[in-house]
Amino acid sequence: MRIGHGFDVHAFGPGDHVMLGGVHIPCGFGLIAHSDGDVIIHALCDALLGALALGDIGQHFSPLDARWKDADSGQFLLRVTAMLHERQWRLANADITLLAELPKLSPHRQAMRERLASLMDCAVDRVSVKATTTEKLGFIGRGEGIAAEAVVLIESFA
Ligand code: MG
Image (cartoon, rainbow, N blue to C red; front, side, top):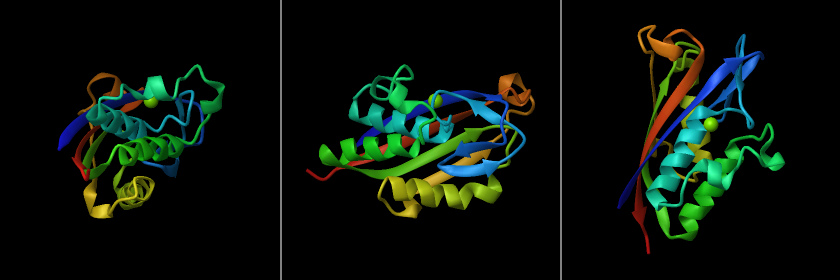
């Protein structure tokens, strides 16, 4: 078995929705990013890449690469999952924490778990999505942006 950890941050900007955990959430702002700014998927990709010791998301999907402009981050997770399976590893479980004042996670939690499990080709009960605020402290508490942390355990089937 191996463990991996990922962390990501994006700032809020103009817009009418955010993508989080592969789910489109209508709201009064957007996320500033080269891709769609999905911090949950970015943290999850980094956790999987970390467990595989294959670097980080920026190396594989560079923000300087025009292919990833406004990209659906689901593509990143599909590609990272393929890298996992090619090397004969599979996900044991993923535990994700969203750090945000807004948007509220709870109405979207189950849809995110299902979307992430679908992208990683695993059972929904292997994917946990949680959320916390930062009690109005710091950039997250001031509503300037959003962050996510992910921890994964992978197991070899070689
Ligand atoms: Mg990111």
